[in-house]
Image 1 (tube, helix red, strand yellow):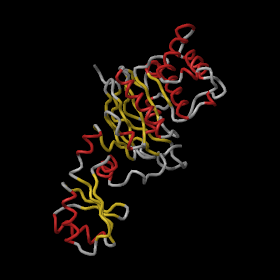
Image 2 (image 1 turned 45 degrees about the vertical axis):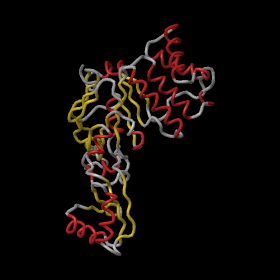
Image 3 (image 1 turned 180 degrees about the vertical axis):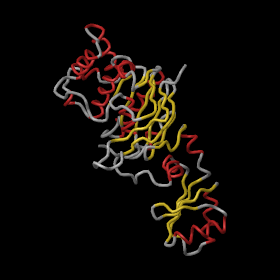
Length: 319
């Protein structure tokens, strides 16, 4: 079976901010595939390019160059065919809050060409599956944020899409509602639906089958969360010190290890970090203020591949 999504050297430039200025690159040539039935995550900070990628995949934006193919249809050449195959849940709410839950779904279904009994049955099935059937006759404005998000997902699934695209689907939700959304997304993949979701939350990215990590419009890393964390060589030892340059040079000379400065702290990757800490403190008495040892996280993966922390970027470049 061919890939559900194929991205090849995809690029997008926004128009120059000034009359004679250069274009503003948002995607700089990224390539990856999403397999059928995957829960695939696109992780990145603001400015990473994930929103631009989402717009291209949902056919709301044409790429400047490269290729994006969804279910064997090119998004630039055959956007109408792509729209028939995908469901989209945008970050911003798209429900009419004055209509009831069921009325929102009926209206959306008619836009997809669904009518009558089949539409009523499909809407009822989705509301039941998402746990909001008992609120079908209630105005959307009376629902909590978590319940509204469930209705948004039901809208995206009305026409039984093979691919569901979600942009930051848990924005504004409490932890319990976030967990419910991600539990349901995992259930969808078990039913054969491919799910692609953008997120800036590490704990959500951990729930994905595979991840594409974007930074400054480039693909920084690609793989399963566990494999990506295995790329970190051992534990991560973080040290605060009054003289980072001296400690970095000392670690290199004494232990043959490469240490880096990050946000005023010194970062060292070392197998069995808990055994290494006493040696470190003994080697540099008075120089070390605090030491922290942790197992590799996706934040560490991001640092490894980009050289900076996750939350240091400006907002994504847009016209």
